[in-house]
Amino acid sequence: MTSVYDKVIEGVLNKDRRMVARAISLIENNDNGRTKILSEIYPHTGNAYVIGITGAPGAGKSSLVDCLLSTLRQQGLSVGVIAVDPTSPFTGGAILGDRIRMQEHALDKEVFIRSMGTRGSLGGLSRATKEAVQVLDAAGKDVIIIETVGVGQSEVDIIKYADTTIVVLTPAGGDSVQTIKAGIMEIADIFIVNKSDLPGADRTASEISMMLDLGGSLREWRPSIVRTITLDGSGITDMHKAIFEHRDFLENSGHLQKVRKERIRRDIIDLIEYRIKSTVWEQISGSEEFDLLTNQIMSRETDPYTAAAQILTGINLDKCKV
Figure (cartoon, one colour):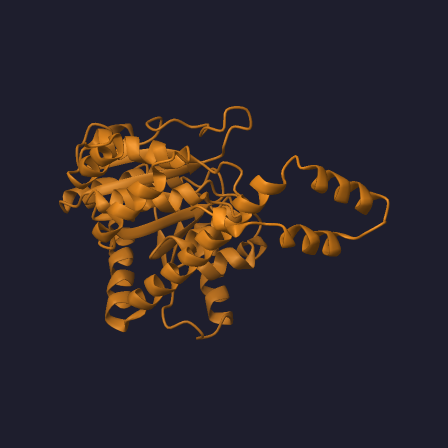
């Protein structure tokens, strides 16, 4: 008998938009069928090229994604977009809706747009984001764009998911590019100076170039610097060109396979960590022993290290599940 999950899997592989949406919802909600869906679609993944776009709020990331979508569709490419929004602390859902942005493409059957919340992930981007990429990949998307919330750890986390990472800056983004966190500068494969019709665009581009010069030649790829104005489409063709130049570099140098192999290693470790953490928490949450040890630590009768070791001796890892 065919299960609901079998129908979802079949629908994803047949590029059924409704089933793609349902698969992502099941994954986001950590449904019991999540592992079955992901494991059975996995052999059909690995074909999509993933582009990450990050930057400060107000930099115009969504407008850039909208313009890039148009260019990719003109190429005849099928595109998926995951817009990672802040999670509502009350509902757990993404604050911004699926189609508040990028309305023009909502009815295009070769475009799938989904907003996802960070869901309080300590790592910035939620585990479901990566798994949604796998669903869109299995559904035959040629290119998948992840637009991050643009604040905190999620900016740096994007490098774990994307083949090409784009950092979006604006001339009005601060007194100096030097104020930008070093980690953000280091993850960029392409810098976009958006709203470059504003005063200070030349200075911003020059400062990025100088910072790259100061960084030396440790990286084989020197990040491109592209100026854009989304209002009139200026620079969008250059952005598109820079993306595919970086893709060609990765493929020709062998870096793409290395990066993806490392990503698989990290995925395995992440899953193991998640299984162990979940199992431990399920077994100790609300237990008398946990409460007793907490109180003993408070009164300095014991310490967290001894308590953790004591708890681990009683944990049954056979109950782990992904």
